[in-house]
Image (cartoon, rainbow, N blue to C red; front, top):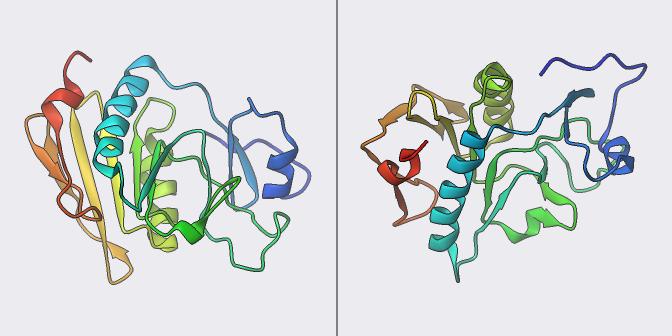
Length: 191
């Protein structure tokens, strides 16, 4: 997840010109290429997506999985040339329909879930943690399939404090979705 050397800062306009099968993020104008996730990552993602997606049936909030562009700091009058940070969370839940457009999400989703893999471990725990906090993502989950742990960061007064850790036998309440909770045993089974 190291930045790619480049001549000038990259913007969302540049990203839009690339082939659809190229996966990358832009962090403050620096390109970071994304590799295909491991099978275990995909399996955990699918299970979480289905659980939350089923809960959201018939509700206002929408769920998206990568690849899905999230322009965390895009302002209303910004053009793609003004946007220098675009992330591709594993799972995004957006409850404000005005944040959605044809290319993704402009602004902070209500919930973001990142599933750790060997190549994204540091990026998800540090870089994205700080970006999501600054952007105002209300709830940020870091899922570690190897340790079978979910760390839930909740935004309070603009800051994430100590996360609540849930082990593989726990049930995790989804704070931004009233009445929704995820039982972890089925998520981590058979991985």
